[in-house]
Amino acid sequence: MLNILSFLTGIISLIIVIPATIPFLGWANWLALPLIVIGVILGALSSSDGGRNFCLIVGLIAVVRLSLGGGIL
Image (cartoon, rainbow, N blue to C red; front, side, top):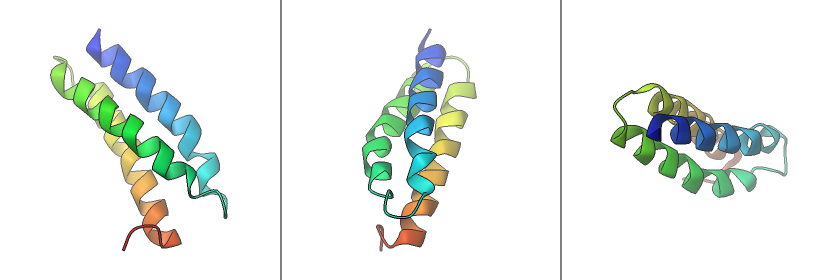
């Protein structure tokens, strides 16, 4: 059950992260990062690792986009 919740939070955050790759919309990644952290925590508490790994990949995309746009030093 926690793995499914982790996948759902990952999908919701992915829906936020995809448009945030467009210039001037990078601020949306800051909205997605708390959801990604919640998804990683839920995935870590579950018995399966799929949801956690999915959230980590989405988080990596968001962090790379923020670093390229100058949002993270």
